[in-house]
Image 1: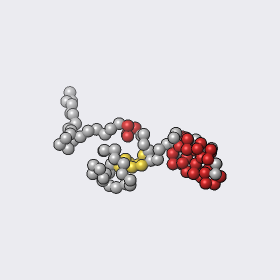
Image 2: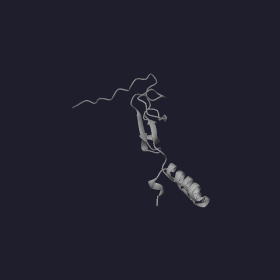
Image 3: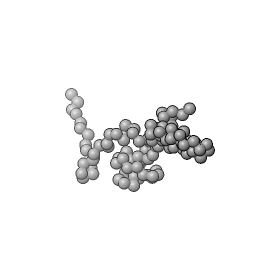
Image 4: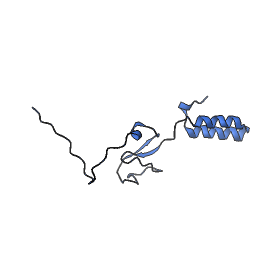
Length: 102
């Protein structure tokens, strides 16, 4: 038996379609569709810089043009919940603070 924590939403939708086409069982297909609501979302590409979700991997994010920032992950990961740190308006990086050594 497949549980919600073991499959993606698409898996459950495909099982519902299979149930409908092979056996003509609409009740069982509806049960699979209900499980799809609790399944994991499909992983996809995310830009770590701007959270854009391009349809395929590219070296540069199509939205912000950042290099090597696309990551393959499922929606809801911690990196998606927290927004990326904001850059200064002029595009420069803030200098790190340096403390004195006593």
